[in-house]
Length: 436
Figure 1: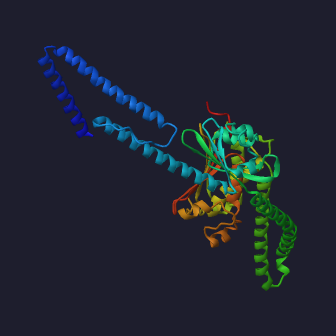
Figure 2 (figure 1 turned 180 degrees about the vertical axis):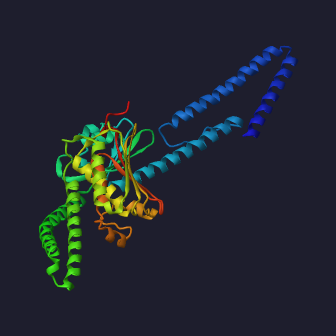
Figure 3 (figure 1 turned 60 degrees about the vertical axis):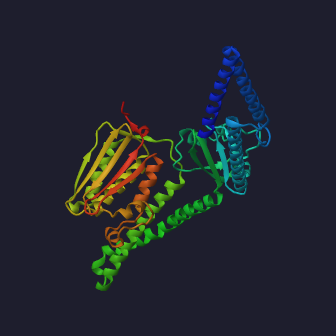
């Protein structure tokens, strides 16, 4: 390009010198320069006309070869023609990719919906028509919240917190359970994936019903067995010596089984029952004092030092029995694994982010690899230690479910040899009085 531009400048300089010479020979240099300049401008205007006509012809058709020209204009025509060809090749490649993407998504059983920055529907695959009843073209550009009118979905979509999927019955068919997953991209655009999870939902409900029914059916026979064993233990002086040890072990294991069934029933109720709308306002300090006193009585022989730090005015909205069960499980767990005369701290902190109830102990601590799995049912960090303490392996699962029903979450911090800290986080709307 530099050489063409240099040649054009040289050519212009030569023309100017030739005009000067011709004007000097003719005795009218100004007139000759004017005529030459006008001719030069007319030439360039003709080239611009060619460029305009060529670009106009190429707007709606395949690229046509550029008009013949020399010098700098030839380079301009060739350069624009090359750019046009590259652009059209890129557009064809992009169109091919889009066509393949649409063909592949059309074969998916999962609904794929593209939503623009104004919450309007841009594009969807056939599965979206089958699962959500979307119709083309009448639903195009319509707001997704106008087409899926479930209040739960509207709240989920407007909050824009898509860290967890949303399960919801299909519009017009309550027997079909759908899972909604939304991802934000671009400038306020969203991609929504919807899949039919009816079979998984049914299996999960069967599992919950099975656990609840089996636990309920086992409760009566285990209670009878435990009662008879305790009666025999009370009359141990009249029993043969060789029977006393087996009966003590049976009584211990039957009590453990009774506790497991009790916790399974509690978990089943938390999973299957809807959150009660009639929730009370609870004086938090009074609740924590009761839990602290219970733990001191149950583990009186260990002589723990349990401290409580909570402001008197703090109140929390929720289910009293569920909150008692959650915090009590954390405190009793701390007491189980904390050595005799150890320290357990029960602290409450309120700030603009909500409320934290922290249970800290100076027990043996937990290895990092175990922490993500502690809330799983029957997960054991140490089988022998759990057997010694008589734990059911369900306490932290109950805590997790209770907090989820109250809009909260459980955080676990621990280091081996430095104790553990279990923190219950509650959102600001659960706490009164709110901080100003």
